[in-house]
Picture 1 (cartoon, rainbow, N blue to C red):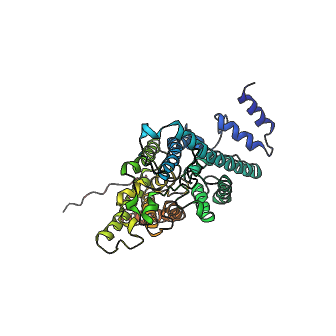
Picture 2 (cartoon, one colour):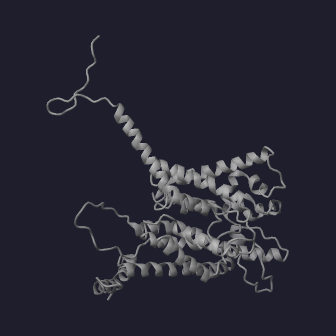
Length: 422
């Protein structure tokens, strides 16, 4: 008997019982649902929530694969640097190697497994307790979480954060589609505030395993933003190409701007993500960066200031370092927690980019503010939509008030006004 028939039999056997949602979830994950609507108004389309989530995951897979290679590359590059050897990144030379892949997979894949195992376990538990179908919302969250954390985040710590993020960030609001905060960013915020030493500093971004050849067991891997925040920008050896292609330390999936850009274009083409939010967020970041560059150029701040490094950083380079690009493409565009109106999306995205760079510059202890900016705007998204809708209503009321009421004939049809002969 086929797996499909076995699952169908289990669905029928446990229909109406507590465990029914679990078997239904497994069946619909592997196969298209065979239920159809029979009454009421509905839209017939080939896409559904599961397919939408799978599309986003497809856009994330290249970023994940690159993150695996980069985790291995950064480890061996840091070991070489500690031994006095400077390694220059070469995509087909010393980056895309089995050595890097094996090391990266050994450190990154456990994060992915724990993220999905714990998150889906919580989803199944709530579905069984509440008696509703298992929702597919965590399919994307489970992939996002390991991509926005440092490579050496302890697995138990990640598990605790995932439980907190799914329960507090989503389930207490009613589940997928009802949450007001992005679940992945809620998990990231919990990790940052509960375990700050594991989320910042110069030793969390590179795998700290002892080198088999007897190298150091305390590898330093400061990020570009970390260098700038500490006023050590002159010590950086990373080029603009390194920043753009992603050969730099950072969270697992946030380094490669070019792959994030391609993923964003794919999501726009598939009509999953809003190009308005992406574009306006980029504009907001550039505007804030230009303002800070202008402050430096005007001489209002000197090199002795702790803010000088990030203020003097070229405004456009803010987009190719840190998690700004990743946050704009994959998390600011979340259709549940973002603005819903077209005009509101412009305001929503602009302030995400604007506030991200603002926090990045004025928080030297943690020079990365995109996740805080997105969470803040998640809270204000309904307010933005409210005033946009209210403004449209007021415009229509004003237009209706000033409209000319045409006279009606006996059948109730409006008559045309004839020009008076002078």
